[in-house]
Length: 291
Image 1 (cartoon, rainbow, N blue to C red):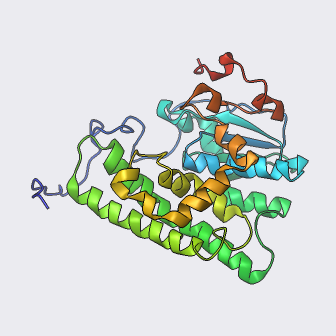
Image 2 (cartoon, one colour):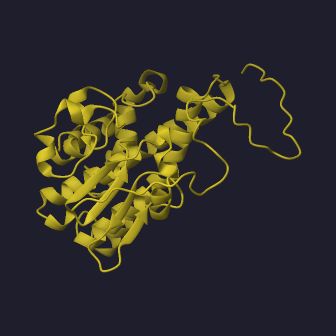
């Protein structure tokens, strides 16, 4: 390993706003809102404020799967939160998610609206609300939730760790890239070994565990994030590839992946979703950036 430049941490850390990196303009060491901004509100019981990052895709897939099962109460309005432009620091968004991260959900089907934030919490909330995609048997439920929380604990090493240093950091550094690549490959091996024994992550049935893991690790193994497939030799994870391909074939997954998407081919994007017919009646106007 090449020798890194010497670095001595200062006695007291201070915020350097010019530290570089793709997301430096929105990262900050304090919480709370930066400006007043009222969130829009649609006609449906569920109001989603999101962006089609892997964490956002989890929830839109879940909602589309619930609708595909016939749960009409899962109808939702999906509003676009442009995180690169700081929408998540608006006062209205911070009221729904004090952590200023997407996705955030507001359930208005109750007398008092319920806010839910953190993608894993939203998946579990919806699964329990509609009695779907989480097992009721105690052992199977424990397995499903264990994998759900495995994803919540593991993905930061993939995204904020490997993804940041490999794809977004202003300079490439050998130590952090090697450190996080090793951990991501270990995680992929964990997942591959699990999927060698069962068709889905939680067992025999498709569940919120698959919905949580697929947007991250399914995308990674299919070369759809960080352009790191060759670097990480993802072709060796054959069971993960089989699972990722099967999930991707589901119509609800295909719809969910489109919602709040702002990159890729225009036909793959649906910036906002307010009705099922939006998937069929998208116009170029809906694909233009907000003003």
